[in-house]
Picture 1 (cartoon, helix red, strand yellow):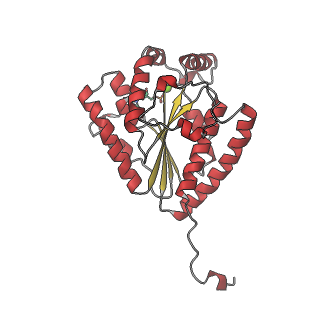
Picture 2 (cartoon, helix red, strand yellow):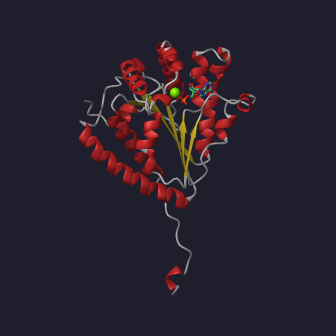
Picture 3 (cartoon, helix red, strand yellow):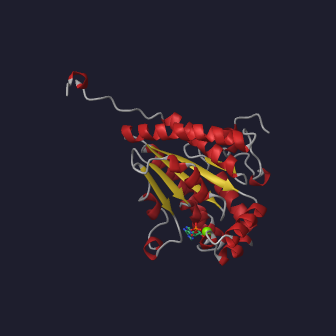
Length: 270
Ligand code: AMP
Ligand code: MG
């Protein structure tokens, strides 16, 4: 296990990053499930407190972007980590295949209108990154078009950040073996079968193409204002802990403040 700060270990440095060197089974900075559960619970309590302050302050926003291949744990992360957030002040949005109306606009149109306003936490289950991932892997637009999107995305995220929105991006990285197990679980459990589509098997054939597409996304779009974090996600307990850890740290950096009371409140007698 690395003795380095686990948050730093997960943050993508575009100069040196190589996805092939990341082990999805790894758990830097946390030894086992039991310790992770305790540390995660403490982090979630802190996050809930910070969100209260963010909402009261009403001057900044936090946007969390979740990306990952099918069954990587995007829904699970929202359920296990971000369910601690007060729904009043949280905006969750899943991005599926674009509707006809969405397709007739630029790729950021549907994204921008769903970004959080000041005081809110926004959570994207998939995002504008699909437009340089699935779109690239399946040749949905010419290469020239998706290639120019890296710069457009970086500029867009810079715009968000300059208007008070902190952007955190998590890539949940699982192994093909882990995905197979999770698909099997979905197939075997009648309560989970709805999550499985036969197209999911088809997608597995494109695994290496997705890895290449993610590698390029991670090195082209991990910026100082909106860094990418690669989360080894085979172990759900690690995934939940490190995401709660990074989110808590982001709140600490934002440091939202409860606004001062109206003058004279201490004089009021009811
Ligand atoms: P799910 O997350 O399982 O509900 O699936 C949503 C599907 O929508 C995934 O297969 C995504 O790859 C696909 N999707 C999301 N955004 C886009 C996009 N911009 N273009 C094409 N497909 C997309
Ligand atoms: Mg799916």
